[in-house]
Each structure stands twice: as C-alpha cells, then as structure tokens.
Amino acid sequence: MAAFLAATLTDAQRTAWLRLLRTDNVGPATFRQLLNRFGSAEAALDALPDLLKRTGKPIRITSQSAAEDELAGLSHYGARMVATGEPDYPQLLNYIPASPPLLTMVGGANLDWQRTVGIVGARNASSAGIKMTRLLATDLGERGYTIVSGLARGIDTAAHRATLTTGTIAVLAGGFDKIYPDENIPLAHDILDNGGALLTEMPLGWEPRARDFPRRNRLVSGLSLGIVVVEAAKRSGSLITARLALEQNRDVFAVPGSPLDPRAEGGNALIQQGAKLITNAEDIIETLGSADPARSALFDRDWEPDLTPDAPPPSEDDKSRLLSALSSTPVEVDELIRQSGLTVSAMQMLLLELDLAGSIEWSSGQLVALKYQ
Image 1 (cartoon, rainbow, N blue to C red):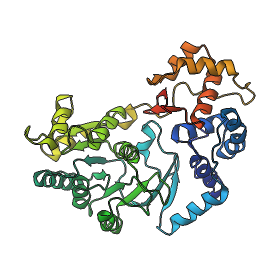
Image 2: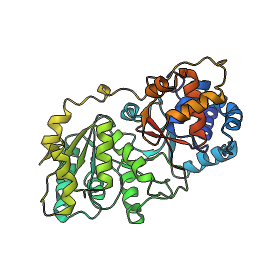
Image 3: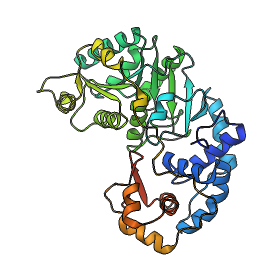
Image 4: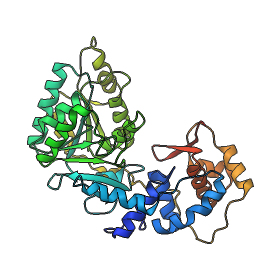
C-alpha cells in the first residue's frame, strides 16, 4: 500500500504512472498489482517486456513522448493530473474498488469534496422529474452539500444547473476535449466559471463509447456519500449507478413515481429492494448525517501480498491449473487459490499475465472471470 499511496509525485514519477496506466490492458486493478509487485511505475515499465513475452501477445507500451504530450496538452484546458494519495485527490474515491490511480481534474479548488450527494436519472426526464431534481439539488446545495452528476441530458443537467452557485462536480465519460453531449459544453463552462469541477479518468481525445458510461458512473457514486435516483427506466444507466453505489457501501435514495410512467419503474423497483424513499432534501440529510465512508473496506485486496522480488516465475503447469479453475463466472481470488493449490505469489503473477493479455476481467475489482474472446 505504501508504494501506491505516495506523497506528491515528481514530474518524472507522474509521467511514469501515466505511461503505465495508458499501456494496453492496464486498468486500475492491474496498475495496483504492478506497483505492488515491482515497487514503482518505473520498475514496472522496465519489467513489462519480459512479462509480455510470457503472455505471447503483442501489447503497446505507452511511450515517454506520448505521456509527456498528454500532460502538456492538459495545460491547454487548465487541467491537472492528480494521483491517488496526493492532496487534491478526492478522498472518497479511496474507498471504492479499483479507484483510478490518476484523475484529470479542472476547477473545484474551493468545493467540499467530503459532503457530496450524487443525483442521477433519466435523460428524457419529465417536467415533474426536472422540477423535483431542482428542488432537491437546490436545498442540498444550500445546506452545504456538493452535487455530483454525469453531465448527461435530463436529470443530470437539472442537478448541475441548480447548484452552479453552491457547488457541483461533473464526471465525464470521455476526454476533456470530447464533452458529451455537445449541447452541454456551455454547461461545462458554466460549472467551471462558478467554481465547480470537471473530472475524468480518460485521456485527451477519447470519444466516449457505450462501455465508458458505466466506468463514469462508478466515479459518480464513488465521489458521493449517497446517490439519489429521481427518474429511471427499468434498464438504465441510473440503475447501474445505484448498483455500483451499493457495492461501494454508499446510501441509495429514490424518488417514487407513478406506476403508469415507465420512467418511474426503476426508482420504484429500487424502493421495493430497500432504497430509501425520499420526498425532500431533509430525508437525505437525515440519513447522511451518520454516513461514514470509512465503514467500507479500503480498495486493497486481502490477498495482495508483499512479494519477494526473487520469487520463481510460475510454470506452464501452474498456468494450466489456474485456467482450469477459471470460468466465465466471476470468482474470488481466495477461492481460486484454494481450488488450484497455487501459492499466492504464483497466483498474482499469473493473474497479471492473463490481465495484460486481455484474457480475464474483474467484477467490482474483487472477482475475476475469463473474458469471452
């Protein structure tokens, strides 16, 4: 953990972190494992060529110049790249699985990042839903809460606009130069002009794709003490955000709606499943008064050891035993260790290799499964 939660990075360290994180198949969980295994991003980058030989698959390692160009490009937007453990890194994100090692942020210097509420809902929101969002967001903002949302149409837009003067955070699914939707580019500027913040984990030039929105949603919930769902269809991104919030041990609130309105089906279902029914901001504030994000386990995995650098590499037989134990059904790493009989050191190394080869995927940063090829 000490290798990951560092003090303020030097320019050279920040560039190395960025190179490692932008390398093919290196996500937040793999990044953590590489740092834990090799002690620093620089050492991990040096070790990658040998690791990649064992995977048998060609993988692009981000060049020094590409990382430097990205960092230089961010200055055009007045943005900064913040590493976990640095003073500007949002502390609530330290309590979610697979938190981003690096975030790109702009604005927000005077926001309260500890008293936060996420508000999400339908893009095709009703006028009643928009009005309810404005009332909730305005009241929460006036009570000192910072509002977090995803800059989408409908409910997100209403939540941001209602809290421009009290404080709002917009989480982007793409790069800073690819704000989506285009119609909310002026809103993004308004947020910054009023002291709010924009943030993303995606690089400059990144056009948001369908798979990027759940990644963004996990940050919306991770930045929040609780998530409010105003309107949501039965299958919607808002319900994904609510599920992620529960996995992150956050509170989930829902505004009830008419059973005749499809936009209310998701919120009503959440209430049936145990989400707190709310009709005003006081309902939220009363619950959040006792909320403590530290009740959730830190994002370290229990099975991550301090490995001996001289540990022998796993054999092909070890790899075969692990592949036999894996399936498309997510399973805990501890269970894989029990089933395969592998040492913790061999397990971590093999999972690193499979991760770099793009052969496995993580669920909530805790469970692992074979990826459909």
